[in-house]
Image (cartoon, rainbow, N blue to C red; front, side, top):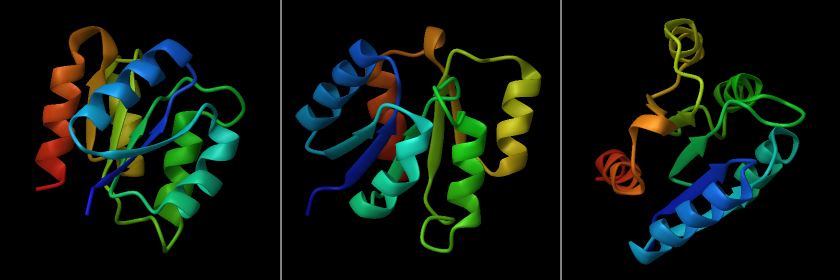
Length: 122
């Protein structure tokens, strides 16, 4: 049974690259281009892990993360923030809400993302 990854990312180019790369690794991937549709999509897809951007139209990533942590169905899911926001306060805020890991887009390749996802899904 393929593990499921849910990606919340508004950048269409990055989203499609990430989806293609994860599918190539055998993952089943579902996406939401914005924060508003993210929770409904996550509840429907029942993923094993979530990749979450912070800068999103509508609800931002922090608000989505808070909803994930507040919901009984999703609160235990591993969430990796994958964002251009990399200031210490951004990372601390995400950690305070309960993120499992934080990747700064500029510092990571898709190979790094795949490795990180795999490490959580072992």
